[in-house]
Every structure is written in structure tokens, then in C-alpha cells.
Length: 206
Image 1: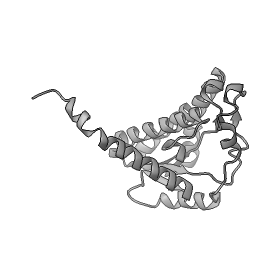
Image 2 (image 1 turned 135 degrees about the vertical axis):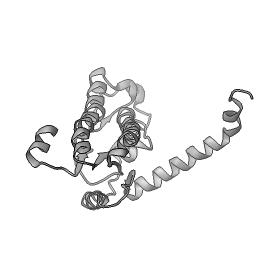
Image 3 (image 1 turned 135 degrees about the horizontal axis):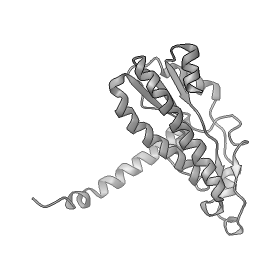
Image 4 (image 1 turned 180 degrees about the horizontal axis):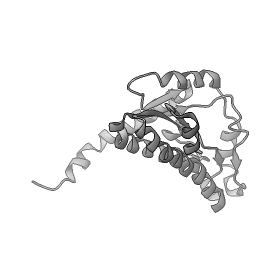
């Protein structure tokens, strides 16, 4: 499909990779088929879209790829382990490939929206519940999730981002995404600093 699109249009400056859906349930509740389907769609699907686009973008002298991630690529909630796995995986993939193709004038932006008023939660796949997790709070968390973002405003910012140079590596959208990612990164950095002496002490002695 990517080859066909470039063949018919001649040049495509921006590719948006948005394969994905949500899978909810405690890790123990998920079936092997559900795990495989989540990773095949969210990770392998997105990877193959990017891989298929790269030769065309390289040959035409550059372009921009917007990879839909999520605030869930930086933070986690119980009950969404495989969804988070897929988003963390794509963030690592894009970070790496962006370095590989920078010399070809191909740039990437990871779009990290928070919750939005879309059909995302309605289309979420649910694991068969296990009684052991009935009182864990997972189900209540998923059922009571407020949708604070305006999807149209988010799309507007995604479109606007392609005119920025250099491309923003990450585009955080929504007050919930900003607040939660900021807190997670601050906590992560503090934990890293607390382990600085241990990290340095494990080098080969001079």
C-alpha cells in the first residue's frame, strides 16, 4: 500500500503511522492470542509502515514521519501492560531509526496525546476477568477515565508540527499528558541521580 501511494502521488512529504488499539486487563488475565494481536498491530504494523516509507523518503530527499504514540509511551497505568509495552517499544524504535536516517533529511515526531474524546476506549479490547483482580482497582480505573482532550485541537497541532524545523522529536498533547509525563520524568531523573555513585563505582578500575 505504501509503494502504491507513492507511485500514484509521486511525492509524499508527511507519513502518519497510526496503527493501534487498546487492550485492557491485568497481565495474568490476557490470552496469548490477545498479546500477539496487540503487539502485531501496534508494534509490527507501525514498524512495517515506517520501513516501507523510508526508501521512498530517502530517494526523494527527505520527509517527515509522525508516529502516533501516547502518554502511555512515557507513563503506565495498571491494567494496560501490553498497550504500554507497545508504545514504549515504538518510542525506542523511532528514537533509533531517527538517528539512522537523519543524514537523509528524514525526521520523526512521536505524538503523545493524553485522553481525548474519541472512540478509543469504546473500541478497547478487554481480557476475560479473573476473580483475583476484582478488588485490585484496575476495572474501576478503566471505567472512570475522564476524557479531557479535544481531538480536533490535537489534530490541528499535529498538522502544525510538520512545518516546524527541526521536527520536534516528541509532541505532547493534553494537560493530563503534560502533567503525568512531567511527574514521571522528574521521578525517574531523581531516582537516577540517587544511584549515581553506584553507577560510577561499577566501571573498570583504572
